[in-house]
Image 1 (tube, rainbow, N blue to C red):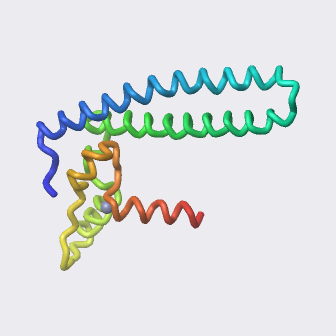
Image 2 (image 1 turned 180 degrees about the vertical axis):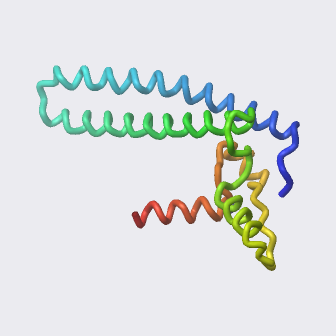
Image 3 (image 1 turned 90 degrees about the vertical axis):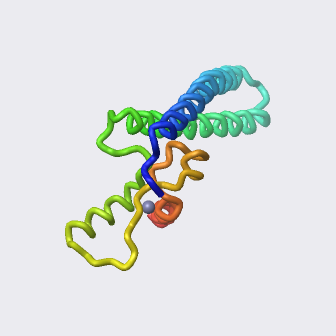
Length: 145
Ligand SMILES: [Zn+2]
């Protein structure tokens, strides 16, 4: 996979900005909803209802957490795209580490590592920091931990 071209970078930037705008709007209205639900909670007389309200609220706040995490990922990707980060946009951090250590050790490896993330993946997840393989490796590590 070659390094993303300038035109591709512009496309990813537009995608990221659109995602960011959508998510920022969502988080605002969802937080309002969750807060409204919590205000209602305090005035609820029926204890049986309170259980489900708390559940809904937790669910909503969980979604917000994920959205805020995604927004951070998008911000990071935009910084990489604009050259405001030490990392390059579209590089798998782990592949890069492996490629660098091979270079340092001058290993004659059979397969040359290509650290650039596949275009199809970046179009779907422009804030991806890892290739599919290393992303799932990381998620497995997190599950074990
Ligand atoms: Zn990788």
